[in-house]
Image 1: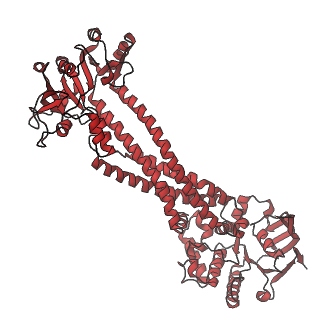
Image 2: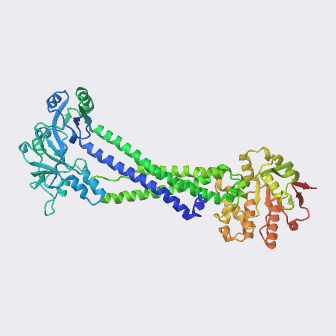
Image 3: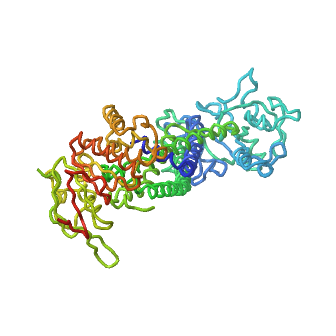
Length: 407
Length: 222
């Protein structure tokens, strides 16, 4: 039966190939988009794993750069039982670095991908209470410092308070390279806004979202950004027992309405929700493409069976049941769906592999086996659904109706 | 004992002016193992009668009984099985499947259930009997009309049917090839003991001892 179905498809090769192309493209689309979505989820997941405490922000602010909180809260929160460290932070979008503004960098980028990348790489200033941060168990940037002899340098210490000293990422060290093209290194200067800073250390978290931060003393950051002396954006809080994060977060949120405590699991879940919604939108777009592919297969199958009506009559007169005719036609559309799925998935994997050669800074298209299986399942389902009407129609002919049919 | 029996069979088809009755009440009996010819002018209803005997169509009224089984009371599924196991049919237009080779065409009735080596051997043997042992893997478009009809004969007989029905089997062949086809048909019928019913308007192939059923205007002439 399989061979028969296969031969039927081969007998009209051009039509079969057009139907295959029509369905392969949406499969390519769905696998590619899910791979991108998966890559973004992974990127955020990797970032979140680096952060073990909770971050206290003003309610309804999406990011610490938009948040401001009352400095008086620091001592009150520090007094809550179970809290080990409270580290004040001041976050803002950085002024132009090396006299290049983010907007300018985005606009002058050659391609839309580069513009997006530049947008994601907008430099951000993190001013930290050096003493408090150095006491943290899960201080992200301290741990990510590239140790000598690879690069050298050190992290912020008490002696850097109030001084124009900064720790930057390896990525920025390369992006804002010296005039001779060599990457910045400890001891080099970097201009942030109108001030010149000494680079004292280089870090690398390998996270797109974290490797954009210019880390400096909180007082220096306030001065650079012309903020009040006591301005605060967020508090990074560590508990004695990380397992208590959720419970103590709830205590804080219950006591201060204006404070939102974001555990990193919550951040990841929120991001997952957003990505889920984006996935739905993407799937709706891909769904339209699948619809077109399905129409292509249905059209191919209808034309195919209309040309073969007497042949179907021969099968029926030779004892094939209507169900067996239905199975034959469905098998043909299923084969079309399967080949389209294989071709679409293979193209998608190749496209992801190629794209990953050119994508930098952490974003990766990751076509996991689960995504491939989903792409294949959609292709098979589309094949079956698209072939169901032609198959049903073919199965309804009586033997004599079919054999007497004059195409 | 009658292998084929029809009792007051009527058949009407819808037409522009209502129903058009093709058969007006045909009763006949064909003994097992015989060769019967249904003859008559074009449009007399002989092919319609053949299709009713082959469970390919349903009479408007009356009964069609094959080997004691009443076809008019069978479900569609039962008729499918009946055609598959008990009826071999040969058409005027050969009606082979273009994508399949000669041997695959012979095996068409068995394709849904899978082809065993025994079935393949049987099909090969049948093609050899009709003189196509050298054409097993050829497709219909590479064969002459006579060869295609011989494949159709092999397909009809490979399942050892109780009844073989042939609807104008030489209608598209020259007289020499037609004689060859009838020679093969008769040999195989004689060898297998099956009941052969041939619809034709060409009486040259009728031999003494054959049962001749003459039909005219939807009625059997006696």
